[in-house]
Amino acid sequence: MHYVGDIHQPLHATARVNDQYPAGDKGGNGFPIKNHYGAKNLHSVWDKVIYHDPKNFKTPLSESDWDKLGKEAKRIVGLFDDADLEKHAKVLNSQIWADESYEITKEYVYTDIKEGELPSEEYQRTRADIAERQVVLGGVRLANLLETIDFSRVELDHDDAEWMVKEEEEEEEEKKNQSISDMVQDLVNKAWNRYKGTPSN
Image (cartoon, rainbow, N blue to C red):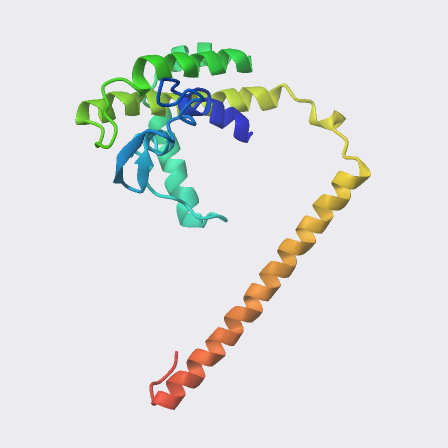
């Protein structure tokens, strides 16, 4: 699932190769940009959908964050023509996805932008449209890809099943420890407030 999303971010599929970077610039990570919303290089600018998605959500997501992401997804899906999206979303060949990202990078990502500077307003406006379309296209293609998988035929071997159970147990233990930690912290706060003569909640 992660790879399907990644390959639609153009700089996850390409890199700039020149005299300065004969082995490539690590997908734009070697292209410095003036820091804005925490994006310090060209790769991170595109990761943030050209600053249209500046917030770094923490996991697990809160209900509020799920709500914000849902509204944002609905907004950007509504920006694009359904028929055009449906036609391209049927393409489930990962090499074609990579080729598309390469063409986008060649024509749009590295053009009209200078190292060490903020992208121009024109760059941000036009490239944000491209980045948002890639987000939507990647999401719809992922949905179509998942529909082709017969999950009833997927079997976990013993090691996989054991690993999943162990991971669930560790998550439960972590939640329990966190709960205990919260209780201890609450008791400490109450004791401190009582010591200072401040009523506790």
